[in-house]
Amino acid sequence: MKNWSKGDRVVQPTYGAGTLVEVNEHHTVIDFDEHGRRTFSTRLVTLQATSEPAPHKAAGTRKRVVKKKKES
Image (cartoon, rainbow, N blue to C red; front, side, top):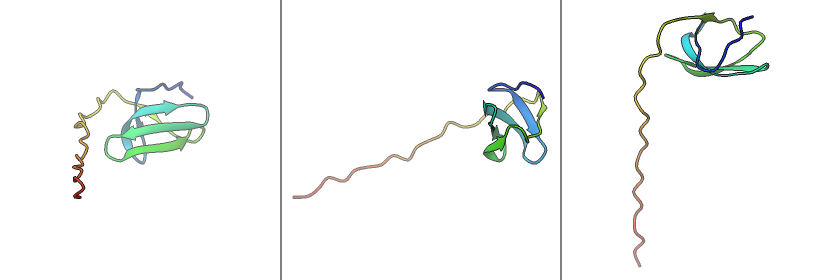
């Protein structure tokens, strides 16, 4: 088994390409390009290294909340 580290680009057979977010002896968390973030059992997950760069993701925008003034 390869020693993966945070930030490595990988391919998983079901979900495709993604970036490793967290890796420890119990869990492997991958942020997939097209399927979002998924958590796997480190012992069971099958990964292959890839040199495919991560796609550019637009910065998240938060909805602005406008508070109404209370009338007396």
